[in-house]
Image (cartoon, rainbow, N blue to C red; front, side, top):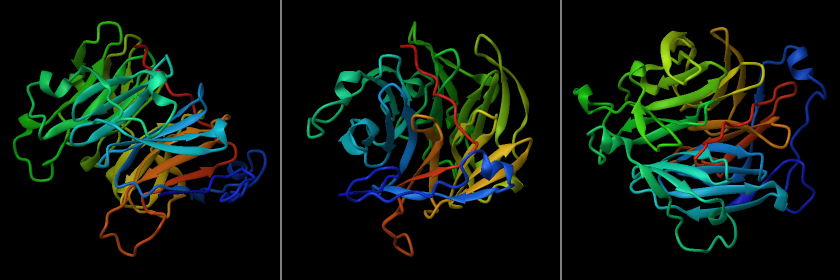
Length: 341
């Protein structure tokens, strides 16, 4: 069971979110922090990879450990549904497809879901993505220890996804680590983006014009790469963030229309906006295990945030593991790139 509390609706069980200053006020008057509200009490064990689909006016996200796909449908009076997804021992990330379907990455590889399977009765059988590539196996890595994790579609319509190693905290042999891979939608061939190197926990992937952002979470340092017209990270431009700026390991991220980079921190209960190597805005989240964020809504003016929870979390709270949201006047996101396959 989950409870829905979304802003802007006049219906049972809905609470209004404070609108704040009307036009660019928060930014213009120097406000540099806000607090997100829990809008869906979904109690995700590991909520992740939220993405907004403007074509269907839906927000999608995953619970990686429960192998569930969650959907919030704005066109149907904020209807929230959940579907079981075949993802092996863990999920990884989501991406949009040009046919309104989804890419679902997991321990099974890179899978495609057709748009028709995302609508209708939520009590239907388990959703089974069609696996088109398995970068972990192709790289000769152990799929029992390494899986796909964070990913995003680049400006050229290709999927870029990095790896996670279950034993990264004690691992001594770096040859067992995965890298960051890119899937071409025309050939369905996978190539490794070797300039990024081997990683323990790939996260924070986002694109801004000719720039790619990436973080190997344990390093607590977001890296910024020059991403050329043909989509090859040709060089590392600079470190986007210094470890001292983070209170916990960086996790999922997105960018806004002003060029800011919004990064969640797993364990700190906050999302930070970075620009020019500094924290320029902070969103407080009443759930410490913050995992991913994206801009959504018809005007891309709402920052949605996924979180995680554990049974032994103390103190217990009904909002931990929930979906959170906040509006920051004057700030809007950019539309997600769409996988061209």
